[in-house]
Image (cartoon, rainbow, N blue to C red; front, side):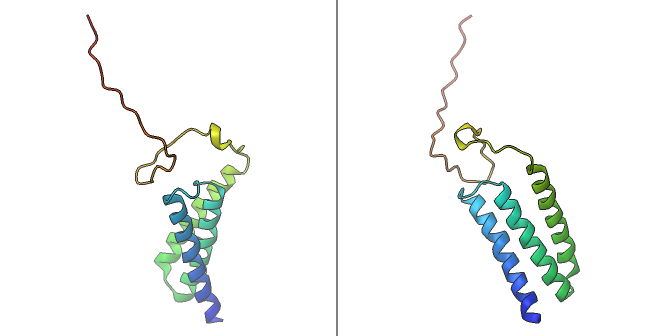
Length: 112
């Protein structure tokens, strides 16, 4: 039975780190799949942490799980926006994978 709790912990780590990697590399948008992976990973960490008596980890993963659950609940009725209509948003620390170059035009003095 101990092996089951260890497998849960490692599966949780793979789910959360895999989702974080995919979003950070631009392979996945921070949407339903990302939140589902976080929810499942946090739940697995809760099981593993409780087994080991790691209560700070359990508490933080309960919060992580609740955040993902609320996000998924709020997404349930949201209509998916087609990719070509989605606004381009660049978050700090997340690589830009759009392939577009920003063109910045120099300011010109206004004639008075």
